[in-house]
Length: 495
Ligand code: NAI
Ligand code: MG
Image (cartoon, rainbow, N blue to C red; front, side, top):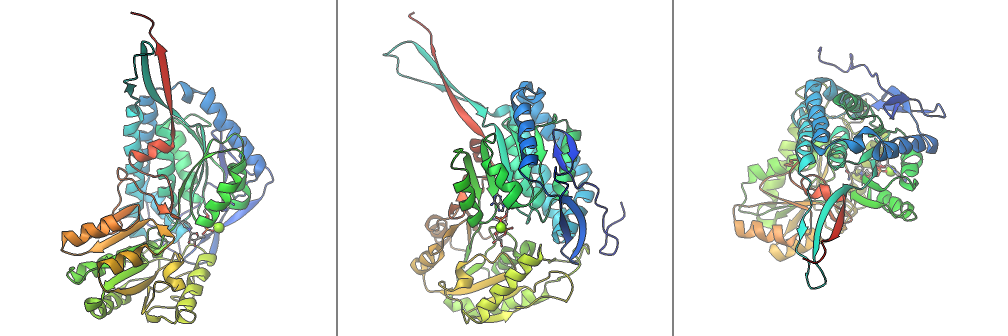
């Protein structure tokens, strides 16, 4: 395959909805525009669905769940479909990577190294679970009778899955993997900004042998297509990743039908650098922590707490590293930082940079502006002299903007780290394990990284405390959200 370039981008073939194994336009015929963030150009017109399209998808998913071949398929065969999908993702890795770069703006090197392999491994990991999701036998009291009591795990049903644009393929895999391993059927709504790879993976899933109706993809805006999924009485569960404010709307709208809900939301994740840390490694960690994926990462380490005695030295090295970062054409293998996903996100990030400079009166150490004059690129930006009560320390920016704060001692830093509405992730940089464990215990966050950042594995659970969400994705824990426990009592009669 010829490598794509900005001048010669990959061709977009799939733009319709996938419902009951068939590609179809939105009933209204409406479409939405998908963009190339590196140029701002329109690259595709994708179905813009509404309630009627969601109705059709839910009907297909319900029928596949209750009557279709999927409902009779053994757990092992479900696993085989997932194994096959993992294999197909690997076979088409380069094509998928280029499509993701085209539609998201992230650099090809990272998509090849992180997104695509993690997607394949996530499907493979849950393929392995499919025939190992078991119940228990329960040692119930015998005084009332001779009972045999056992539990089994059954699918929750039709799962509505609403995902964001920052890791389009990976967020889809985190949703589909556990849902399908448990025997559910799904109606997925990709983010309106990044529908393209989801559609290609949908096509690969059909090839992998998932029967029609098991997986359905409905494109469209959150307020129309997303809203219809959330309110639909035929949907049993919503799994959502995105902004906490959207999760609040979803909670309200799902209340009438009492849907099961899992949320993976944002963060303002603290990294703590103690004076005894390997400073060069901590700087590298800070770089990965905030600038990976243009800062469009729910667990981005956007608050960096540095112990007073090493603060100035740290900031100097961090600035030097940030200024060396290669920004630009995401199809170029040497590029480290691509474009923000949309005009809206680009504007949001720049407006927070303004807030940092003016309203908060922090010091902009480097960056602080757009990069170039074409596409939605933002320079890696570092603020120092930040106080934890400033807006740039409390509100999620979701871009390449880091706030550096000082701390005095352990109690001070744990208190500051926890003074946030969020609780998704945290990190600590130190050679002293006593300090590392104190942070790991003291910080209220779903993931704590010790002398590392952004390490992920499909086997390791991920999710948030507080406003960062509820429920866990990945690992065995994700299976809980996609299965109901049935307890069966059998009266064995008098012996
Ligand atoms: P969003 O939360 O509005 O969108 C995420 C998904 O939810 C999309 O598929 C969207 O179409 C859908 N959605 C939106 N409104 C909906 C509704 N009323 N009912 C059902 N579905 C709905 O996030 P958005 O607006 O794209 O980004 C805003 C901010 O959210 C970002 O700047 C960032 O701070 C945060 N965010 C956090 C993410 C994370 O991974 N935790 C991912 C994306 C955004
Ligand atoms: Mg929104």
